[in-house]
Length: 419
Image 1: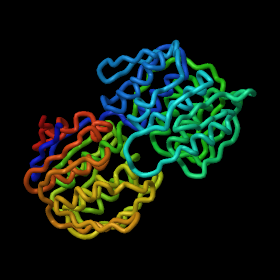
Image 2 (image 1 turned 90 degrees about the horizontal axis):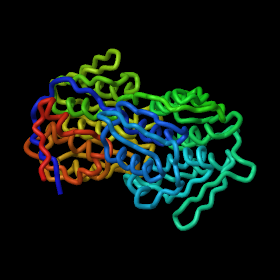
Image 3 (image 1 turned 180 degrees about the horizontal axis):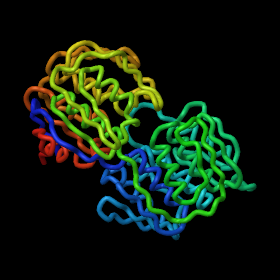
């Protein structure tokens, strides 16, 4: 089994272009199902989650080819609407095909999705939204069968009890195939939702309001294939910036909108880093131990992103001073803590709270990736640690990072993938 071997203590310096956003490209690829013909998605990262999504599209009868950083999806003639359990279990985001299949074919059959084990993430909101739009949904033995009801799909007002990103996306996709107006109240506001709206608009869909808590979709508009460029991955950018904060140095990331990382950048500045931004670029400079900061509470956008919690924690664990983290989004998002403790981190857990007391310097250890962002956090910690760290179970990391080791080497890190 391969692993990263990282010798810490080397400052990071240089410029890095950030790949396309994983959390944008997956629903955008599913949205290609909505329209017959050939769409082209640019800035599409080479990730295992993207590969799994392309496999699903091919299984459904679409052509899916990669050309450099672009993928070409031809959804002229999908010939099936069922996704087998083996593909569904590869990633949580596979549930996004429910809305797209329902809108295009009127039927979808799939099992409950897999992905990182971050605690219960029920899809009740997804199913409630689709039922409200006119879907009959049968749940039995871990499988879901969704069909248009006899009267057909119809736009209406949907009220989400929490701003679920996935439920918002599924409702947007399904609503494109519903005659009438669908209004999503309590919608998620994440930048990736805005990106999905951009692609749907490129297809000809009448969608407005993304980025606010109310999204409106005029269903039934004629759609056509389109070319679209995916936004930069804000969590990947946060990872490289936290790596530079932990290891010291000066790193510039490009292809990323700074306003999508406001909460993370504020924390890094408070910890003692210099942060400068410009159009599609962020520069971070770090020259001393990071300091403890005000409590970090994860929250829906524009709050602090749960996907960056472990990454920032790893950087602060090797600094000095104390920081309280409160994880409000998932029940099991501290699985990386035991691994950080192997490096000498002082982290005390109490339910959803984690008190991190900086120890001045972490030390190398043999570690195991626990999930996507937890694995990235271990790499961040290793960059600033003394000695050599080995991080195994890289499959988690490859779900969301393209060429993580190569990119870090380009910035001066001593990191190698070992067979």
